[in-house]
Image 1 (cartoon, rainbow, N blue to C red):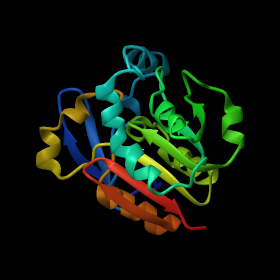
Image 2: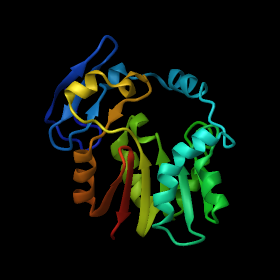
Image 3: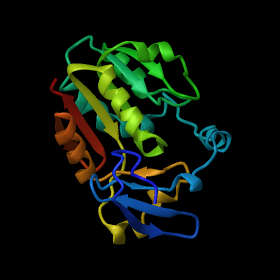
Image 4: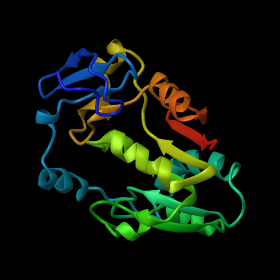
Length: 212
């Protein structure tokens, strides 16, 4: 079996399979992931993303994103500089944060691919419904840590794995662009390893503060 794409550990076991894909789990960090050979190619992946219709004027979507923006804004200073990583074709969280006085930069590998955005450091970084799509989460995670200043925040939204029984009935795994699935234990592992302050907000918001 391939090593874990998040922590590189070789102790990986079969977790679950359905009609479309297999799912493996790392015994060290608990990440559940789809094997490399069962993932979409770049062109097919982007074609799926092109179907998304996120609209900054959609109040329902803004309400969804407020589950991250509101607790995050309680942590960060006024006029902070932030990076919305993986913002997609219709950036919305960045608009909400900008409307609240923060200075936002966008980056998305398909829709806002200006790598100059990755040459700076920021007071905070957001990634909403992004981390489950990453083919190489180890590299991107390290990049995120480098992009955030000491005492800065990383704000994430992703649904969390509970157990195999719940996973078997979970709609979230059925999105073929979702290839990595995290649990509270996964983020606890990362927080301990990388010296981060960790806070869970509700069922799908994760806040991490870089302590050094």
